[in-house]
Length: 67
Image 1 (tube, rainbow, N blue to C red):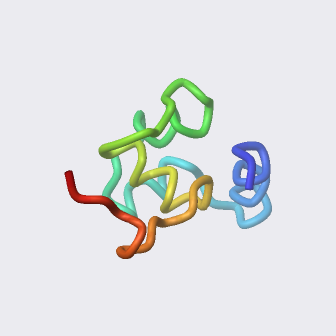
Image 2 (cartoon, helix red, strand yellow):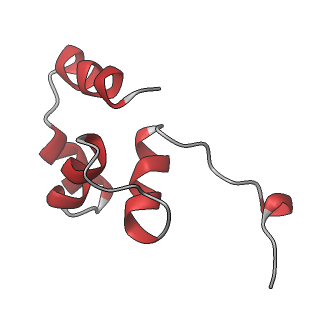
């Protein structure tokens, strides 16, 4: 799913991005950065936001590597 598709879904549901962020325990600015392409969402909180939004697939436990 693309960021634009996710934004459209928010509009269709009548839900604000900020309200979604609050209800999922994410800082609003982090969610907006991910949706607007300002953060690559490779790791940490931005990565978790991207997964929760559906921008990235959740990594299966068997796919993780230990170093």
